[in-house]
Image (cartoon, rainbow, N blue to C red; front, side):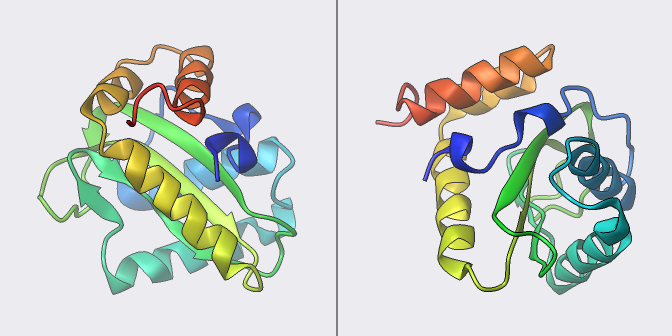
Amino acid sequence: MKFSDFVSTQSICAELSSTDKPSVIAELVDSLVKAGEINESDRDDIIKAIMKREDLGSTGIGRGIAVPHTKHASVPKLVGTVGVSVDGVDFESLDGEKVQLFFLLVSPPDRPGDHLRALENISRQLRDETFCRFLKQSKNTEDIVQLLEEADNNQFVS
């Protein structure tokens, strides 16, 4: 699975303004609503589901990266977005560091394979220090889209 299979490029947030975990999640979900990927009527419920998942354990996996995610019956297919925070956000990460890179995923409950493949793709790409460094330095949505395309074309991970 590639980023182009699930990342909504219209929803990418190159400069997140939120400064805490709940507001980052809301900002990313709102970007998916604005892009037409999530119904506005499902917004609050999806945010609640992601926060419930966070209560089980932070999806802040370390090295300035978090992958908040949930399954929700309202989405017909896997959808995701990317957000970058220049200053970083306290996301209760496993390593205690602030998070700068966010990959948010929402998938239908009846497609667990897609959800897992997307998480695998994200974690594989994010193991590459160069990819992460370039993402953190992105100045706009176009930069992020280009990096995701390069990752899809295996220009980072060997």
